[in-house]
Image (tube, rainbow, N blue to C red; front, side, top):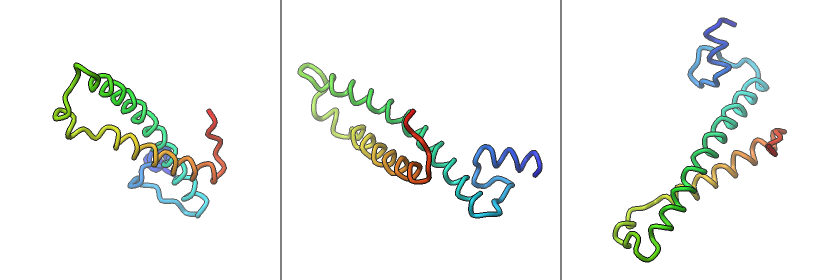
Length: 101
């Protein structure tokens, strides 16, 4: 394996120079990609949860009016992220990953 192939493999690049040769290797790469996505979704979920908290405080009496919130989709995005987190968690746990930490 060349340095470029190793770099593509270690970073999980789907279009990297290295191509898997066994189904086990493909499975490992898919799991690694899922873990990276899960980590990013957890960070984004925390960010959106804090936004929802701020928006809720602003919607209290004296805050934003209903017209200002007409196009707000933060809660929907947070719900979508939570569904995807549940999917990825289920996949990784079934593959044998310990996600307790």
